Length: 369
Picture 1: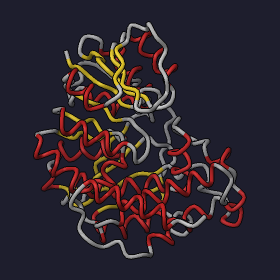
Picture 2: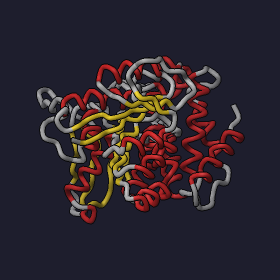
Picture 3: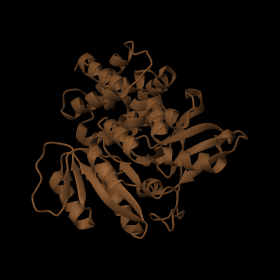
Picture 4: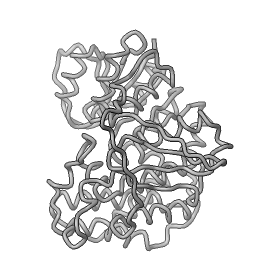
């Protein structure tokens, strides 16, 4: 039996993981979880699914007499429970501290929090190696690439091809983008996700972060990573082999597949979700429009520069998206806010996680809204 802890229980990743684990009751036991702000919802999920331990990472109060053991420190819970796998489904840059805590205490980190890799970069993997913690990617694109590389052998891969749906505005006239409202941007045409990642998908900042993530996860330079528009989200990513052939990983757009792949550490006794139906299935691909989606160009620049630039990109984007949600800036200004900060000098090797947090603080001081 694999003992699992789910971080970010009430988020889309956390709830999908709970759904997926129900199909593998003989293999997986959810021994603990974490929540930040939706405590009552988390308590309900725990009671319904027999989760006996919950870490509340905010000051929010907790109902009494629930039968659930409450922790206030994530690391304390992980040391106490000794899980086999920890799924980090926390949203945003807050997930980095959680990933570090997992690396220091647990053997396997199933990582859905892309910001951990974007900000932590090489330092994150150095820490994982030092503590003997294995990182398994959960993002659908990176899970696909990981699976393809494991199948074909890294030495036989010439480049990575990351697919992007293009979001809800991929065909909208450029002159109309300025009038987009937050309520429109959170409605993704394919995936059911939280508001932040949905907005990132509409600007393709999400895909930009995934380019940076792929660079650090698989150690591929910018000129060996491609991005292609694929609206159906059936092909989750591809690889080009050194012989010129292209291999793709395909499945319905359901995060239960990559989540269970990570939690079961590649050992599927049966299907995790609904199998792909080829009846009337049409797939299309097109080149990325960098004028429409300039964030992707910014990402390739961050990959080439490394140092503090990925952290700056991620932090400034979080600030800008929050401002957009609060109607402080327009949709088209999200990228402008990020670009203004990226244009400053953020060179210099990152030697500690504290330095990453310091860069975050400096970015917050530099952003002008």
